[in-house]
Length: 290
Image (cartoon, rainbow, N blue to C red; front, side, top):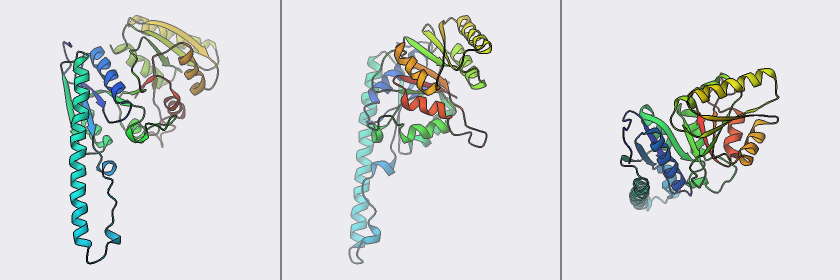
């Protein structure tokens, strides 16, 4: 059971009916235990997605229009009721799974709104968001991100843990490091957080080897070592989105960590090209820091 809970911040898990739901729940439980933080399970019901009834008002005959519009309204209401009940069952199953794993503080939120709006309302108390790489509507679109995932990554200024379809408790993690301001911030966040404390950290820099890069890498390793981490460093040449994912697979990395950044000041809400490619091609869970 969890003790000494931080009631001012929480881990929020986005639970839907996709094949990612169980892994999202399990990663969220792992994170809540590591952070000693309460867990909130969120299921958002976007009416635009759950209502399958087409708008036929423009093609209805004058004599039947009123009757058919009434029937359509009743059908929409039934579908909304079914979506709510389905959401309650999904959350109940996730809560039972979390409690079986040892969590005693699990909250549920069922919100009839878009996922993004629902998360915005939770942002002040959000410490970590856990979500599947794709949702129910795009679960089979391999190599792509779910629409909601891209939206929230560009909008929310909070750490996001993206999961694959199967949970694997992290033992080896990798920090994608390039010496930039964003990378330094990610390094500091990792060093200060208990989320990955005690795990082996691979600090990997994808660039040419120079005296400056070696100095940066050594300094990063020293900072994590001072925080109690065991580290391993590497400098690899090549396109970051390719060689970092290759390194992950060769070294059996369970969780990759990297910062998100914008292309420019004008496009500050758009993720950097390397970050986006890494997320789409990652074969393990990925923690994106903002």
